[in-house]
Picture 1 (cartoon, rainbow, N blue to C red):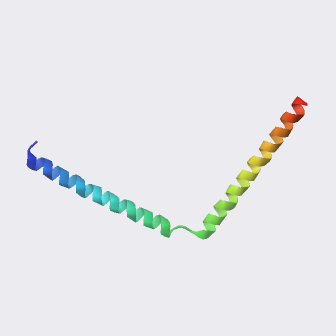
Picture 2 (picture 1 turned 180 degrees about the vertical axis):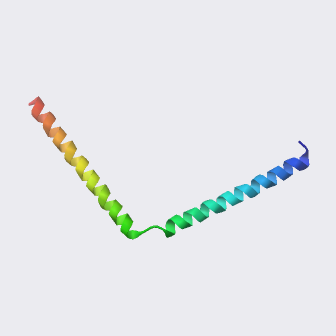
Length: 70
């Protein structure tokens, strides 16, 4: 491979890298713009429900183990 071909390939790789970075930035901007407050609130409520259920199941499991070993 000659020096000119290497330079051409390096320039091509730099341009591709710049395009990929630009696309990634555009995707980030789109994701931020599409963020919806009501969806975030619904997700937060669901997370609380899941953690509450897990806590309840863990409590019941601890109670069962306590009763079994008593």
